[in-house]
Image 1: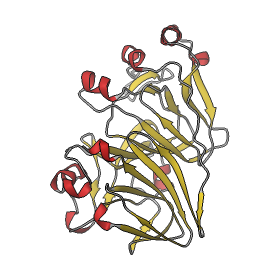
Image 2: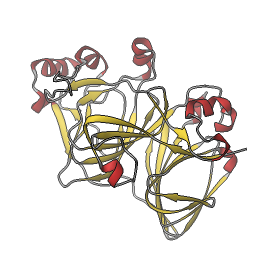
Image 3: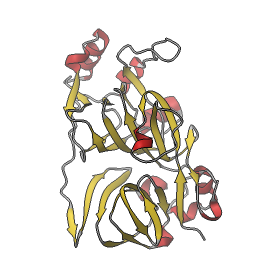
Length: 316
């Protein structure tokens, strides 16, 4: 049975998008205002499609249900993770996501906790991450009075930075950023502030202030995650993020590296270089799912990978 799946992404045009998904990764984007590549997605608003083998042209959600036991333990029928690459040619809106309990009750959806890895950014690129209010009442008062400059917390980011953005965190990716994002399989977003921008029809985009005030955590001042790479011969492994939903690691393979698969599938994204994985050729921009029956991954570089692995308990 096929255990190695390459996927074709789906793209989202945004008023803040650009063309770096084409220039950096070679994707065939729909326009020069393409903001997101959903590179591994089983979400009904944009699915990845298998490109290789007997399962070619099958959407990920369908593949997951067809061979569910091969993805790992548990019986859930909803693929748990989504992975994107985001090109911020302009600032994204300041926004917040609900947790699972609120999203199920209000939106009939999963919540949205996510993690970001900065693939690239311009000098002095900023990011909104958290806020300066000490309590929910203080946050609500500042938000309703429009005191955005003093409310939102701005950080300067650098290539290689990593952030965990739990549900309830005020955040915004800003102009000049190229971001790899791993998240729950959800598209629920509450827009808090959008710089009074107009859409293509001349209308201001909708804000969701009531829901945002109900889900925003206070206080909230998350910072970047600082983990040092582990040297394995001529190769390096960096444990970027581990949370209740998934773990994310970076592999910089300059020679040869063999790693074991666990009990659940792995999402593998090539963010630089080229090489092979279990004799399958891989290049920058490729994304794959490897099922546990692969058992081992033999990686030959020079290639840099980001690997996202869901927690088994989220598949039950």
